[in-house]
Amino acid sequence: MPDAKPDARAASRSKVSATVDIERSGRQVGHLAVPHSRDDSAWGAVRVPIAVFKNGKGPTVLLTAGNHGDEYEGQIALRKLIRSLDPSAIQGRVIVMPALNGPAVEAGRRLSPIDGVNMNRAFPGIRDGSVTRMIAHYVHSELLPHVDAALDMHSGGKTLHFSPLAAIHALDDPGLMARTRAAMLAFAAPIALVLRELDAEGMLDTAVEDLGKVFVSTELGGGGTTSTATIAIAERGVQNLLKHLAILAGRPETRESLGLPPTRLMRTPDQGYVIADDAGLLEMLVDLDQKVRAGQPVAQVYRLDRPSEAPVAYPARVDGVLIGRAHQCLVKPGDFVGLVAQAE
Ligand code: CA
Image (cartoon, rainbow, N blue to C red; front, side, top):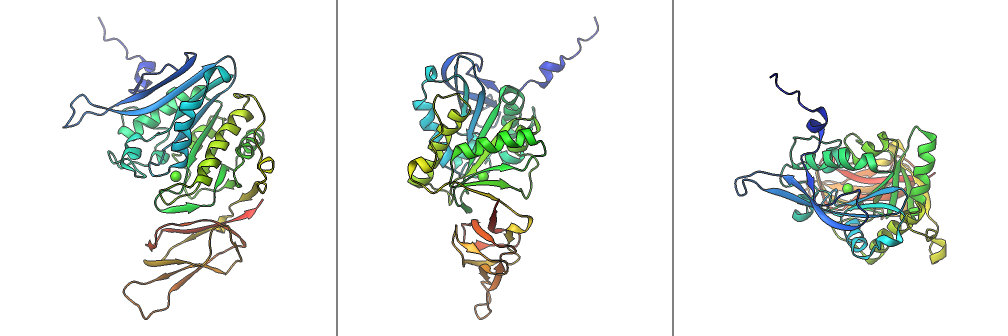
């Protein structure tokens, strides 16, 4: 007998197992088990929580948070959703992963402490890779083919701080861009941002966009903490997106209907990023949401070993509004200092 040919499909299937079945109707709350053999647990596995709600006919949305473990609004809003969403009230399917990079969430860190990998640079993942890459591979190979739209909620984490915003990438396909933009606006964050990334390869965003599906992200605050205001934005945004996709009945709640200023539509110009060239102590000279002019210093950096030396000024390169900033006061060359956005 010749050796059996390896089954190509079996060879490409994720090694991650799930206690939930995404084809089953109703509410299921379980976990993924990611094989992780190690000295202290020979047959061990890392568990990543996942919930599936399915009823009737309608689109499938994937809601994720904890892609970076130290960003919290999305994690809290999705845990609330898992406990409150009534499966009989939906038409379609809602897949919820409130701690996408489970080990990073448990450690309160941006990156996984197991393999040091950034989940948002790990897509499309590797079937037989490290834990973070196996989670990414599961999401890419087992979930994304069934998904019509995805929302991945970020915040600034321990080192950055953002004015609360929903964000999308500028996309070449005009039809997909229009649908993606409408989903971003339905989220009803204070700012809706068309973002240019410093480095978009390996992101969940790019993986979903490349499949021709709607992808919305957020940056809802930062500093490794939350506020009542940013959590409210996250919770309302999730409900609004489910209504926008007609998975939940009703119309999205607009900011105007809540007596809030309307969403500001903005974009990041190429020159919007301000990056440190010096190591030292960072003093912000402009607060989030303040207007800046090109050439106006947004921050200055003091050399720690030269107290008599003037600090180095970091000017904005374009007119606009400061929507992101460093949260930490110690910077090194290459660190992010600030992000200036302009009205679209
Ligand atoms: Ca993030």
